Each structure stands twice: as C-alpha cells, then as structure tokens.
Amino acid sequence: MSEGLDWRDETLGARVRVALWLRDEVGEKGTFSKQQLRQAIHGTEQVDRRMRDLRPAGWVIKTYRDKSGLLPDQLYLETIGKPVWEHEHRNAGLRQISARIRREVFERDGHVCRRCGITAGELYAEEPRTPARLTLGHVISHKAGGTARAEDLITECARCNEAVRHLTGVQMGKEQVWDRIENLSKNDRKSLLAWMVHNGRPQNPAEKAWALYWQLPAAHRDELKGRLYDLLQD
Image 1 (cartoon, one colour):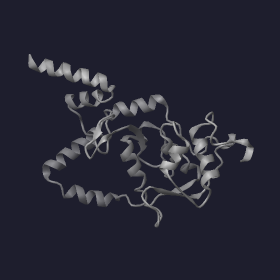
Image 2 (tube, one colour):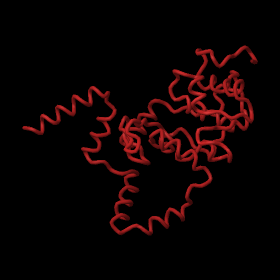
Image 3 (spheres, helix red, strand yellow):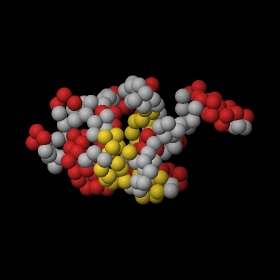
C-alpha cells in the first residue's frame, strides 16, 4: 500500500478510506457490493455517498443500470480516478456546501423532498421500516456545471437523490415535459402554474407542522401526538 496508508485507519476521512478500499481490495475492473463496502467501512454514516463523491474526481463506478451482467446489488469499478488519499488531490471533485446554504435550501423547500414530498424521518409507505433522510441534490449535475449555490440545489430524500443519479442521459427534454403538461386537465394546469410561480408546492399550515414534527426524536413525536389528542378532546 503506497505511502503507508491503510483503509482500516479510522483517522482518515471516509472518502479517503473508501478510495483506498476500492484500490486495494477491489481494484480496477473489479466487482463489489454496497454491503461489502459497508462492512469494510463500518460505523461510518453515509458511506455510500462518500463512494459517490469519488465520481466527480474521475472514478468510474458503474451499477447494473450502466453495465449489463451486473446484479442489482453489484457495482463495477471501471476506472480509478484521482488519488484522493494524496494531499494535493484530497478535495478533488468536491464542492463544499456551507451550513448556511444547506439550512437556507431546507427552509426554502419546507423541509420536504421536492420530488416525492416525504419529510425527514417519515416512513416510506411501501417500505414501512425505512425512515426518509433528507439531503441536497443538484438541479444541474457537477459534471454539467452545477454549483453549490442555493439556486442550484434542491431538497431530496436520499432515495430520490439516488434515483436521479441514475437518470443521466435519459431525462426528459423540454418538449417531452411540455407534452405531459398539455395533457393535464385545466384545473391541474392551474395548480401546476401556481407551483411554478411559487417555485414549489405551497404547504398549508398543517403540512408545515407535519414536516417539522418529523424532525423531532420519536419520543418527542409520541408526546406531541398525545398532547394533540388531548387537545382535540376539549
């Protein structure tokens, strides 16, 4: 292992550890799974995201959507990009989003996923054991020139964020979207125009409270649920 760096060294950043693990344990043209990655870099939050953060630094990591022959849980390391374990390349491909911008975008978007409408901590209807986690996505990807400014960011749940990443090259064009709009009823067109004017779907007071409620710990949510129940009995 060059420079004495070991992916097992927990003092290294998660992105660096993931890169070293891919280099040393998988290798270029190698196949691996997210489960193997999580087991190797265990105890690290968002390890999948740290892997994806390597892509803007030239690392080509393909899924079964990109490469035939792969199973849904497999990934393929086609190309090792910049050596992010080296100091001069440590921030390669990263575009830091400040805490202020992050807070501004979440507040602007009402603390809900702008794609599916789920709130932080809310359970997915089709996956009742999976709570949603909100993150920030780019309206325009890094490769296409997207920035870390609020106007180029959107609130997404982690699941929608992952799905959007796989739409590269197959997203609908302007005229295709317009065809969908033309097929809407008049009332739906009016609703859509109102959302466009507001740059989002306006939330009523109950929806806003719902989004804030789901940011609380479970014990606090249970307490508020009981208090609201008692209030309605009066």
